[in-house]
Length: 421
Image (cartoon, rainbow, N blue to C red; front, side, top):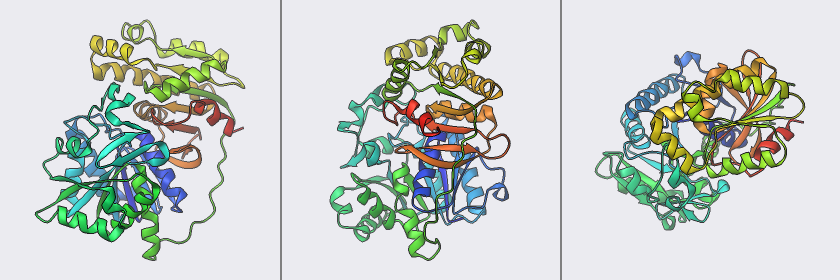
């Protein structure tokens, strides 16, 4: 193993797996904290997908450190801590606490924090995160139900989460190349370990940042920061030329869509599917909490409709409706009861012959994969930037498209299923 990746949610893990595979690495994605180093597969890069983005910070740190130990034990030469390209977190964490813990474990003199992913409209300029042409704090992320992002200044955001000093490598430095970037980070850490926000508004910037961190024990960021890493291993003679992509055979069976995200992108995708005539079932959190709506009810609606066309089950709602539910049931419990039900629905759909499943939302994807008992995922073709089809490894195969709530074009749901024929 050359690179070990610790991803804080499942969709982010598939996102970075796709990035590395496109750059010529043999990649395997595993689910959950590895039992041991020997339990990890043989690959150039192993991506460990956790469900730690919104957990208590102490739990996220413990899971990340345990994953790091397994990856190091399997030979990883470099660790990447991968989080969302919208830097989803609260002032208590979890990005800062996990980064700080990994810096200490790996004795890293300095590390980068760069969530940029220009292909998906995420860029960092002067330390500020943009979503398209909007500052993060002006984007729909300001109303995220679990991690509302109301400050676009990543230096400020990260400094509130960590005791390590946080600085900036601005665009003017990145434009000068890898050596200049490396010098800037060394200067930032002259008095001890430090974290630097790395500006990046293009893929060229991401490749420069990747080159600057060749041989360093730790990087952190979105999937974009991985863009330049395979080339480092190739220059060092540790990685061969990219081979031919493996064929991807989706199993025959019924198709379904489960949408748990309430992001603006997913709301549009749900609406698009309904406009195209996809049968849809809207989950009612109040009825679920009262026991008047169960997985059995959803499955009773779904089974007769399974056939050549997909079905859609969604909890996606406007921000005002989400806030009302959270105020009534509590933020964490409101999300957890939806995730539990969608996990049960996914398991029931699989038993009913669904073999092609599109899932929207990181937390929802974690619940679904957990319910299905998938221990590893093979990476397949890209649907939209950052979102591939995957195939469950071991047992009865199922094709899964695990989409971050913010990703994908408006027609993502129907486009993804159409790709499989």
